[in-house]
Image 1 (cartoon, rainbow, N blue to C red):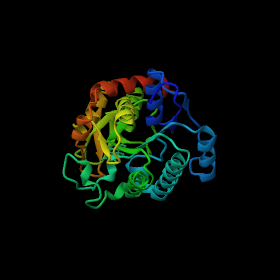
Image 2 (cartoon, protein in one colour; image 1 turned 135 degrees about the vertical axis):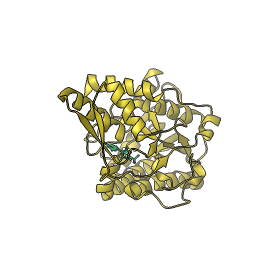
Image 3 (spheres, rainbow, N blue to C red; image 1 turned 120 degrees about the vertical axis):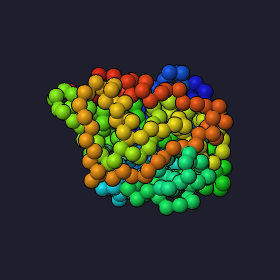
Image 4 (cartoon, rainbow, N blue to C red; image 1 turned 45 degrees about the horizontal axis):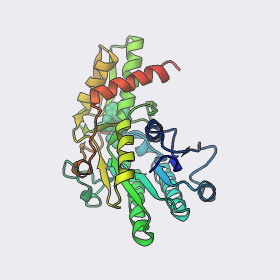
Amino acid sequence: MQKGEKVFVAGHRGLVGSAIVRRLDSEGLGPIVTRTRAELDLTDRLAVDRFFADEKPAYVFLAAAKVGGILANDTYPADFIRDNLLIQTHVIDAAHKSGVKKLVFLGSSCIYPKLAQQPIKEEYLLTGALEPTNDAYAVAKIAGIQMCKAYHKQFGMRAISLMPTNLYGPNDNFDLQKSHVLPALMRKFHEAKAAGQPSVVVWGSGSPRREFLHVDDLADACVHLMRTYESPELVNVGVGDDVTIRELAETIRDVVGFRGDLTWDTSKPDGTPRKLLDVSRLHGLGWKAKIGLRQGVEQTYAWYLANVAGK
Ligand code: GDP
């Protein structure tokens, strides 16, 4: 990927896509091509084909997806499987037909079996039953990985699949019902502090363990692997370390400066007990995460204060 080569970032307004655009910009890569949903509906096959035939990007980061937290996935599984299958099928196929040099497909750590051995190695894919709260989304993402492999095998397409762990950072979704745990808790603590509330409700038991990667780290890994990785075998992208939801909640409470208590709502699901990625393959490819959780939460809270709170 050289300066002057056209790069299409699908999903550039989202958490991941916006971080990839920032990362490309920081090195002057591009021209970067983007389209809003109103300009290009990625679930519309003909529109996607036309876009690729006209623009002919050299590189594609496929960061457009319908994503959400545990409750959204559990409540709207049809939306998650339909939209993701359509978006990825259209983009990968059109990228192939228009002759892109390389495509990065982004999946998720929820593609792995619910009770996978920890830390989770790439080869555990398709070795057990999925976590039921997000199996529709996971099956769509698994189909995307297989599609990249199949296009590589049949057509020689250079399409690589990266599986990020739980992500957070600027442009995350802070909706209390639909978002993931980290932005949800940031907003809950912020609003509770502002309103002088005595406590904040946190879902589940607090005991599940999750790994959190700052999206700027992910974007850096995406660019590194776009440049250096060729195999259709997937690569986990994580930090190699996890925390309990209780520890996460306490870190965010500290950063936000809320002095009250945590109350646990155990009527809400815990989801999978642990989801820690094995990152040896990634480290072997010469990349390591740099942003620690505390530092990343502080940076994200500063962004939240400047861009979301009170708006
Ligand atoms: P998951 O990693 O797919 O399970 O997705 P989430 O990020 O939505 O949830 C991670 C864990 O955090 C689950 O055990 C949730 O029950 C727990 N959790 C605690 N409080 C919240 C909250 O306010 N919102 C969300 N989304 N999850 C929460």
